[in-house]
Image (cartoon, rainbow, N blue to C red; front, side, top):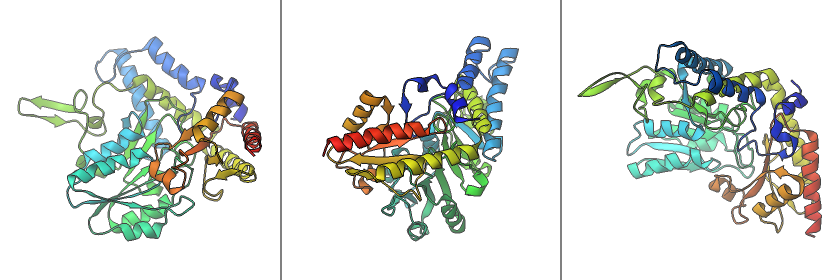
Length: 398
């Protein structure tokens, strides 16, 4: 598929320049149509009936699970549906029996969703060591290795920093985790749907995914890859309908994985849409997406780096899909508002739910950064308009 084909499927792009893919992506027509079909023709619950419509809805959900599993080279039993990446990470942090004296290693480049759940365990006596990245926002594998000791139970890292796009050495860290015999979790919120991912190659025990970012799926969808050998050791957080095979007055028997982790009625239409979204990404081609996004990253970084009065964070050698910047003397929220009101450019501003990361960049006192992030639907013209507008704003301030 060409970029123009994808843009034609997203009406939202007709009137704006949307550069906030790191937060969420607009939903293509085929995804919405798949959801509409559910609501119009078989809007019933799943796993709750033997009549034809219920069986169809259940089959559609399981088709999504199988589609996701094949796309990421997992087995369908290893895919647990969640509402988002945050819920997937919390499922691990609260589902495993981390106890006093255990240690967890994490970086200072994390989104709060991959930091707060671990810091929360400190009240149970769990030690959390935060490894600092280098000035370009990349964590050094040797620093992580040094942080791991005999009490370390888990290493967790974001694949791509949401605050600045710094790509972390997840494969190297996977080898370290394997050698040290500790659990390993990757936050793939900014890489899924942008880069080719194989869960086995990443050597992670857990990978948390969103449906509504790079995969172009609906909001309220996500999933956790959990190695099959570890599922029995993890406790479900949401017990109730669909999670048990038997109940007595004295207890209950959990059903098999992954269903035991998916209590209650799921976001059925959303998950059906997610299955269609993954197929849509496959039609575009993940290699084409990666090449396209790398090119836009490089061009935008260079365009902004050449402007006076603008600070661009990170290095074009190790950022992907995200370019964060500031203009001297302008609050990032004010700058984002100017871009919106003058050119209908949608960018994110602030701390990006990653305060330690923006602090590491030296941007916390400025109120954070402005962040432009993109996907296959963005064009060189989008980048040109943003660059020209920022140059005009920067020159006006001097």
